[in-house]
Amino acid sequence: MKELIRSRVNIRARNHVDRVALHWAAGAGHEQAVRLLLEHEAAVDDEDAFGMNALLLSAWFGHLQILQILVNSGAKIHCENKILQILVNSGAKIHCENKTAGTTLGLFQDGLTLLHCAAQKGHVPVLAFIMEDLEDVALDRADKLGRTAFHLAAAHGQLEALDFLVGSGCDHSVKDKEGNTALHLAAGRGHLAVLQQLVDIGLDLEERNVEGLTALHAAAEGTHPDCVQLLLAAGSSVNALTQKEQSCLHYAALSGSEDVARALIHSGGCTNVADHQGASPMHLAVRHNFPTLVRLLIDAGSDLDATDNRQQTPLHLAAEHAWQDIAEMLLVAGVNLNLRDKQGKTALAVAARSNHISLVDMIIKADRFYQREKVLGPCAKGATWAPGGVGFDQFRVPSVSKAAIIAALSTSRAVCGGVSWGASTPVWRDYRLPLWLLAGGRIDACDHLSLRDPSGLSGKSLTFKQDHRQETQQLRSVLWRLASRYLRPHEWKKLAYCWEFTEAHVHAIEQQWTGTKSYQEHGHRMLLIWLHGVTTAGENPSKVLFEGLVAIGRRDLAESIRRKVNADPGTPRRCTAM
Picture 1 (cartoon, helix red, strand yellow):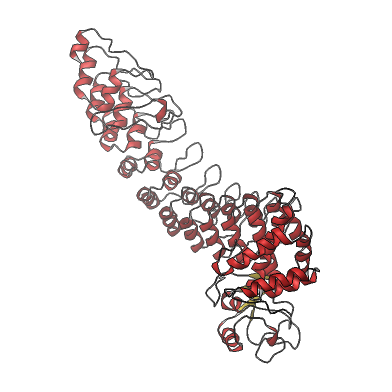
Picture 2 (cartoon, helix red, strand yellow):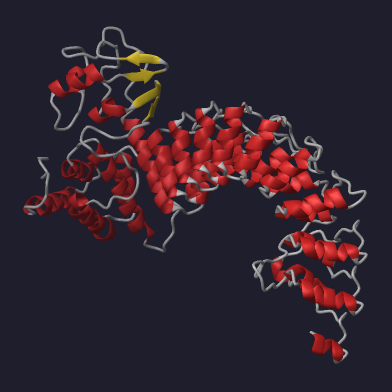
C-alpha cells in the first residue's frame, strides 16, 4: 500500500458500487491499513452506493478497534445507511481476508445506525462502546421499517445483544411499522432461546401486528415447531384469528408443516375454522399438495365436506389439481361425492373437465363402492343384527364364516349418527356389509360411510387407484382385449348401465377423446372400474362378466370368454355361470 501511495495512486478511487479502499480496510479489520489511509487524507465519512461508510462497516463486522480509530479521527457517529434492500448478487460484497472472509453485507434495511448494525450481528463489545463512550446515542431509534436495535437483535437471534439492550433500558413493547413486536420477529425466525427470554421478560403473547397475527401465527408461518410449543406452553391462544380470519392452523397448512399442525391440534386447535375465503386448513393443505398434512387433518376429524366461498370441497380442489394421493385419502376417508361447486359441478365433473383420467376413474370407483356398501339407514322394526336375526343370512362376506362375523360384532362397534351400533342393533334387512368395515370402519351418518382406518381383517387396504396386482393381471388383459377388439362402439355403455353405472359416470368417462376409436379406451376404463367393484365385493368377476354380456345380447362373446378363462389353469376363480 505504501508503494502505491508513493506512486500517487488515488486512494479515493471508487469501484462500481462507489466503494473506496477505506471501506475495504474497515470491513476487513485491517488496522494498519486504516491508519495508513487516514494519514494520507482518506475521507473518513465517504459512503458507497448503499450509504455504508467505514464506521458502519466496522460496527457491522464487529471491529471495535477500527471503530475507535474512526471515531477518534472525527467520523460522524450519527450516521445511517440509505438503502431499502440490497441483494448479495447485486455486487454488494465485502471480501475480507481474516476470520470474516466470505462474509457479505447480505440484506440491509434502510436507516441502519451504528447500534442497529452491532445489534443485528451480535457484537456486544461494540454495543457497549457505542452506549458508554459515544454521546447522544438514541437506544430506541428506529430504522425506516420502524425497527429498533432491540427488534434486530431478536429477529437475528442475538441473545447476548438482546440481554445487553434490555439491561440498558430499551423499550420492550415497541412495534415496527408492520405492528410486529420483538416476539413476532423472534418467533417468525425460529430463535428459540431469544423467544424464551422475551417470554420471560413478559412481552404480551397476544399482541397482534397490523394483519392481526400473534407471535404464534408467526411461528406457525415460519414452520418452527419448537417455538410453537414454547408459545403454547406459555399460554398463547391456539385459535386466535387474524384480520383474514385465519388461525395458526391455517398458517401451518399453508407452509405444510406437519409438526406444527400436530402441536396445534394437540393443544386444541380447531381443524374446521373457515377463513375470509371460506377455506379450512384442509382446503389449504389440499390446494398446496401436502399429503402428510392432509392425512393428519383427516385423523384429527376435519370436516371433509366443508365448502369454501366457491362452494368447493377439498375433493374439488384435489380433482382440479390432479393430486391423486390426496384424492385417494379423501375418497377412502369417505366424502360426499354429490356436492356441487358454484358452477354446479361435482368433483367428478371437475376432474373430467380437466381431463384427469386416473382421478375420474378413482372417483367413479369410490362412488360405486359407497353406493354398494351403503349399509345403515333408518331402523326397520323387527330387524336385528344378530345371529338368527332378520337379515343376518343375507350378508355377503366372501370366505368368512358366521362365527367370524359374530366374533367381529362382539369386539367392534360402528357409529351411525352418533348412535353406537352393535350386535343387537336393528338394521335394514337387505343391506350388505363386508367384514373389513366391521374391523375398523366408522359410519358417521346413516347414508354415508367414513373409513378412518380402511384396513381389513384380510390385511388388505381399500384403494381406488389403478390396479397393478399380479393376481388380476390375466383378467385385466382379457378386459383389454374385450374392449379393444370385441365390443362394438356403444356396447361398453350398455354394459355400464347393466352394471349400474350412472349417467354422470358414463359422461365423465366419455369426456376423454383419443380419436375415432376413443370408445375402445372408454370401454377399457369402464371395465377396470367394474373389476374394482366386483373384486372388492368378493364376487366372481368371470361370472358377472358372463352375465353382463348375455344381458346386452352378446352371448356369443360371453361363451368365448368363459371358455378362454376356464381353460387357463392359473385363473383363480373360474366362471360358473350356466
